[in-house]
Length: 315
Image (cartoon, rainbow, N blue to C red; front, side, top):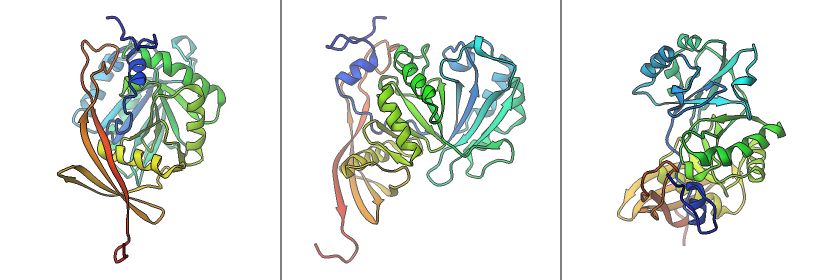
């Protein structure tokens, strides 16, 4: 299949999405739990059919995950390959994403079968399990899954390499996280915050800010703990406020269906903000380089933001 070409000559679904300025806010897929398994490659699609992974163990893990809110991912250090593996242990992370009680646990292993000793469904629950080593820092995943979408590798690898070389945080390359056309994509765990359309420089700024507890709004896609309208509302309010604010500085107080769409009430700094979001069809585009035909992705467009007056206040 010939990759789509944007009018500026660039190819790929991400190039066309950038040219058409497709909205990225509200596009983080909802996920409550993550299983990250280190595997230096090569990666295939689907990821857990990759060579080097014990098929019987993968099948048993899949049986345990089926029907549960668990997102399995392969990870590797930036630039790592099958040839770089030494004799030391590999890592697996069990992660629960939540606005109130996120957590992550690390388990070291030499053989994939060792992971069968742990309850993978524990990542659905807010109470951390007794197994594993608590992780008290952020994990950053950069999608570089070439077999899923070439754009993710072409745009993601330079970002992962730059972040890894900087040594500011724990960075991993990962398999498909969703939103190929928004590459380079980055997910910050355990908070579950998604960023897209990153380049090495903007990724460095994004991670530096996040390490200080702040979210830069420019490349913010949303948080996998929230509905798509809520993600779009938060992204719009962050931009509307005009300055970076804390990861958890916005509180989601209510979300209700109305005749005009979805009305959300968000809190920040003692103030209340009403945000109205409507669902619309976006411009026809290929959502991935492997798409056989273009589709119209659903967008969640913010129609209005207003600050609410405190109860009893006069207008």
